[in-house]
Image (cartoon, rainbow, N blue to C red; front, side, top):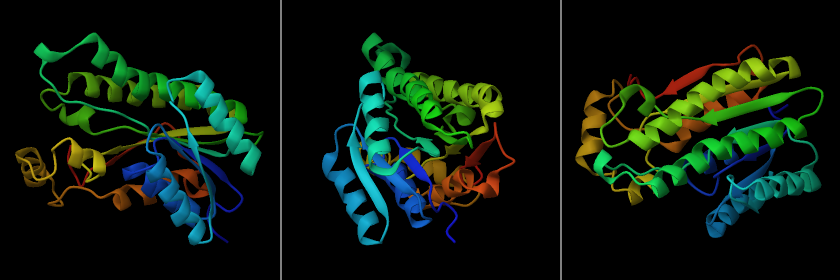
Length: 249
């Protein structure tokens, strides 16, 4: 029997990158998955097609995680398609590196609205959707909270909030049999890091030099950890943050 047979998962920001890899890995282990996306319908549909062609179950659901109405619709459509939710992966996130001189109110709110408010709203909806047997919440943080790179003040602050929220909610939701853990990846090659200009840059070169395993990560380095945290293999873990960085601290 597959590890996630008869489970239902919602993965935010799953049209590409780490979210897409997690969606496909959870589906391969038997979960029915809701592939949430904000704007990349083509990418989300591609993920759903790959899952269904491999024999899995998936739907794509558009929604801005910082909008309560969109979040409510995400869970309503998931319930209509698959029933109650057991697994939530809070993967949706945005970032922009810039010096303190360039910080703006709009950029602050853009990142905090998605990375922090969105995580809270989606988790709130998931808690209402989980049944009496509880569930697993997996937050995708970042090792930026440990390496604190220059020009990342807003982004690092959002991920510091994710670290704190993970700890708070693990204690708050434990009595409801809901486990809350986090994966904090190091630099991972995704569409986003390509678009941001990190891939092939001096930043990537420096990261590889300081990474004990000598390379940056790939989405498939992260997704098996999500499967572990979603499954009963991690039934005695909550409030944990797994640093998935190739050894970078």
